[in-house]
Length: 516
Ligand code: NDP
Ligand code: BG6
Image (spheres, rainbow, N blue to C red):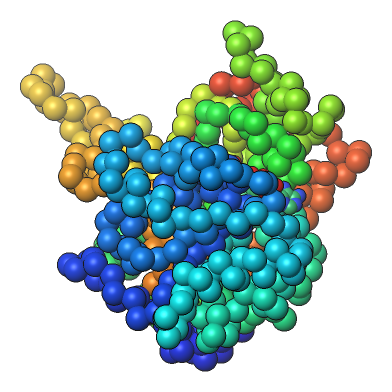
């Protein structure tokens, strides 16, 4: 929990905060607020950031006079920029709301490494800030990580507001490096430029509803927390399955692969929330500290306990294989599927396998955590087996998407008329908290809405700390190096739309996990 505390105490008290509560969402900002999206011509800005900013503005959660700037090298005429701003705004939005949003947005074209171009942006910012005594400037780097140092240096040298660094928040998109060494190098480049509290490192999984529910589910329900350990739980499966392939992002994906793309970040964050010890409080620094502490206890993933695959053409021939994507280099051995075991060496979890599965172009779209109960101590499980042969231990499932839910799989009596005196017929059934059924009127926001709102409010709870990143890279780096050795066996090919490489269903053999 390294440098984070020191900077947080030092800086948070100085940071301007917006006033916002659940009961009274209208925001009153003491300072003039702006957000600049670097890389505004790109996919993420169009798909996620502009729609999220639109929604927050319509709901009055960010100040209506907050200026929104897009910045990129592409020379976009105003109509083109407007079409990017509105491309993914839902069709039901009112024309007035869209027009009002678009009117708040400006575009500045320039390079990421030219003082003159950053000066143009500064002049444009100052124009909208005229007359305000203080300013909060948010800079969102929706850019490849190779540009981060240059852009942060430019912000430091040219784009600070009157209050200096305390009036700046910088949002960084994943991935952060390709292994421990490159992560540390990036970190060494960024840390002299701004203190840790200026950086908001995105992992959008932390803002998903069901990931946010893990901490309260565990720590506000003693019945669950008291069984949340190796005495009661025999395996934890964390799985990410996508039906889509790389979909035009093959160029990016091939530089990273599935382990860097979703495991090192999203799935290890989930693992940390499931496996961590109770935090001292539920504020950002305490939760980050608990996560970093448990990640340090996770043994590096082993090549011998890993299976990797790459999708080929679908069996019906309609969907192309990974290597047929024109943006993927010929003969690439990059993994689009991985399944491996992690061991958390804390007293709570010693001996319990955490089975990680992640894959693209699979047969279903699903992200879930599945915690399998042992079915009692040795004595009680023998008793259970004697009373109800074939019965299994309970399973707690946190379904992240689609259809957010918490499920408890149990054995119950087969309902209906019993015809035999010793009828012991059981049925496997679930007690289900299905969010769509339970909360039909609640709109679950897109993760980027929550994250952008957090940045406006100066709340770092759902962002990733630098020490968590370093430890999570330590967990996967040796495995990545082993998989990517020139003489390593190529990934196993699985058909697009299948459940993964054929042997994945039986892998790993020893941990008693359920079929995925
Ligand atoms: P893009 O590849 O679309 O890049 C965004 C913009 O950055 C481009 O429009 C381009 O703008 C500029 N750019 C691209 N490559 C370079 C380069 N080598 N040097 C300088 N500028 C460059 O990325 P995305 O929008 O898809 O993603 C942005 C960031 O978000 C990345 O870090 C990505 O990993 C991350 N991310 C993206 C997700 C997604 O769904 N798209 C999901 C999760 C994370 P111009 O040429 O006009 O300057
Ligand atoms: C991103 C990955 O971080 O997460 C993508 O780069 C992946 O490859 C995406 O598709 C999944 O996010 P979500 O929110 O759709 O589960």
